[in-house]
Length: 457
Ligand code: NAP
Image: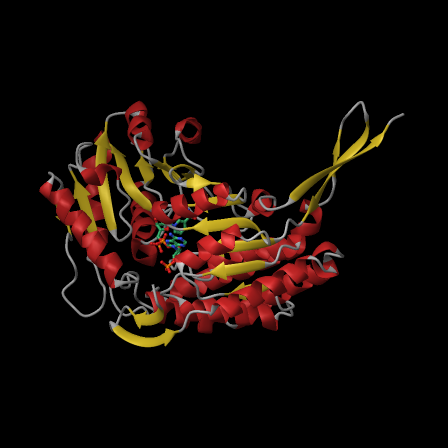
């Protein structure tokens, strides 16, 4: 796809960006590899952590610029863009402060001698990233990589070229040497070529199952480690003893934030029968009343979807769901004005033979299910090809914890919607992918865990 900014609120094309040439890609790779071979990657960590700390400060200073660029390129409401910028600054600071402790050599008990594991960089990483959190997705990979000493080349989604460029600019301003972090406008075919290059030593992709399976297959063919952060159809379970006010409020934000285009958004709402009517009335009413509009208006909760393709795809999914027996409780169609807006929608009566049952709805569309008890909630939750996150609302924490441990997903949040913080390892199981980003787990995905042993004899 060609790199271009098209404002999803006005539907007008703003600017196009040419792809990098083969010579430019080669030069970027050569610089990144040379940096990996230099003292910058393998030497003292302090100068790299100073860059991260400075980057965090620059992100905070530029939060409005970042939020505006996100709003213009992919329709994220300003307030949500500012929150994303704040989270990105926190991620930078988190690794700046903690990486030294996290990457300290770990002793290994052995009767052959004194042993320990050291954590070393592995080489240049290739990151392929999606548009939905255009700055956060980048820093999730870049911050731990700088801390470890792995240079990064990233290919961002073709609809957010300015976000891609602004982030690279901030990293440069933070003092990163040339080659440490490089933004390339390249095609999928070029990604495949790069993966085959011996100088690339790891591949991180966040995106759809289709892209994940192609990039993951290519990485494995070329014997490169990969992490895949893919889609999800997270459950949001409301048990009979839940605080319903809190559950409804969280359900609406969990489903509508970022116009519903969040991998770990609440997508399947599973509600216990005795409170189902009350929850449904309040949830449907709140979804219907969500403020939809200009992403640059601070009152807006629900902005436009990021692209016409996303809007058309979601519209088709809902039509197909309804044709196969789903009932629309509210919404169910594109909003009737300029901009890629889809009405906040609640579907029910989605049976397992409806294609919608196993699909991810990447937009403001909720599926609502009613169950009799905890076992039925768990069975329904696990009847999914995905396993990214999930939420459980209950006043009985013991009961919610028991349920959390039975849900087949990488993350479960009790009495809150699925969220992301620098210290919380993020990732999934099943077709939601493999590997983790953030936290201690994230920084150790692309490291050489080098064992050193001194003989006891
Ligand atoms: P996508 O189409 O897979 O795009 C993601 C990135 O992959 C883009 O940079 C895209 O480039 C690139 N790409 C696509 N096909 C490729 C291929 N064959 N080879 C190499 N690169 C390829 O995904 P999306 O529609 O933008 O994002 C939505 C999906 O991402 C959803 O399923 C969502 O749940 C998932 N997601 C997961 C997480 C997580 O952490 N688990 C977070 C956010 C989103 P172009 O733009 O040039 O096509």
